[in-house]
Image 1 (cartoon, rainbow, N blue to C red):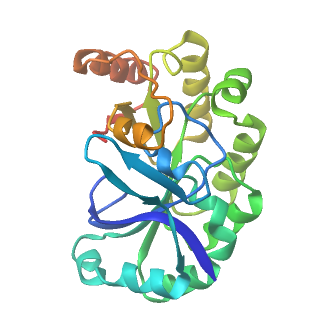
Image 2 (cartoon, one colour):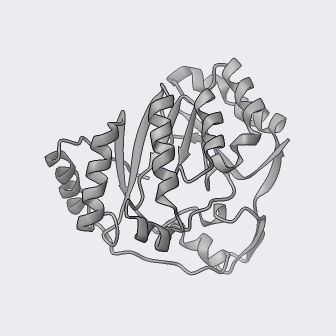
Length: 257
């Protein structure tokens, strides 16, 4: 059995507790215009060309579950030192998770802590597999308005809400919400209100917010895709956004991604 990835990144510090190995899966059903990993959106293996460096290459490769296990276990001694482990990210890792169960069983037997970063826009069958093995979910809150979510992200909020319900009813591990902050969407009065109500309903273990950045610009250009820029959010503005959440009795932490 093989899965398709773009990168296996060691010593990751922002993708869950401790020192982690992050596996970036290729393919995502959403089209978030602020995505910093555009090479992970399309499931197909893609050629790229960087005009600035004259570098050519491909984004994406297939790896067997046995080889992926070997890569993850290379840093096992580091995981045990500080409650680290492996994080499955993307793209949308859940889209390939029905293939992953043999590997997940082995990692569980080796007592490897497993996290997944997910938008939850994925089939419920994949979520059913994940909840049996994953220790911590890092769940995105993107745009909680059905029309805007559909038109901007290509997302179906009904699927998202059903999956969130399933997760909170059937998973006993840690759940963290992570929110990308944009003036154009997140901070609009209606969507911010929806986000507040959503968080109060589910009460996750932790909530992180982060402002979007332009670190993926060079990858967009190398793939000959349009680069979308958003109005910059200052550090002072982020402090006020944290205060807005606090005023609604919601404790959030600003994450530097």
